[in-house]
Image 1 (cartoon, rainbow, N blue to C red):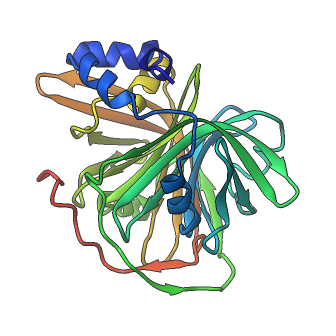
Image 2 (cartoon, rainbow, N blue to C red):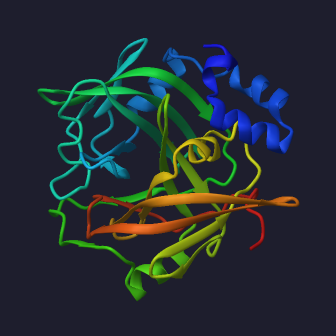
Length: 293
């Protein structure tokens, strides 16, 4: 895949605004449709996968999928298979029922502070779903917090709560978060990415609004480029201790000032799922790359 096809006009607009097109082209050479053996081996030992997609109403969401290692695995150089799928009550349950559904995935391992993104098209299978890869690439460990798995809770997930604004408890949960995932979309497909920092790096400024500072990364600006083309976005926050997930769907816009980028997110729909993940993780070891708040 060439950099001309790796970056759509929205991404190019952001790269040009920030003067990093040549850097983006250099890094973008790592993007391709093939799943290398090292990437396949990494994926096969992961107990979780984040899926980004649109629901039948066109709203963007990011969902957490979990399973025994091997539940997500490469079945060829351009295809992965995932056993199971979004749980009952998840906004993306049933969203993969069609053919060639645009999706983005990210496999992130807090234990090794490694991550891999795979974007493409999905279709349902008898055991779950499969994704035909169009973009596969790894990111550096910047802003990834280190965690170890301490337990696996086999109890059934708890209550699912839906709303159109954040409760005070949900706002506080966001203010103390050190990690979230973001799903975005553009004419060339869907992408799922990661944001991390010290607690407080993302703020719930009201029941309807969030904002965070965009930290320097790989200079490709795929997430900001997608938002330039289409403001729809889905956010996923995970309670690493108790397994609760908080999913938000809405729109996002980035403001560019001298030396700083601030992304604001407007909350339109909220889904909180108690105990959605069976994984229980340790307290974080914060990334040395995290900027001070």
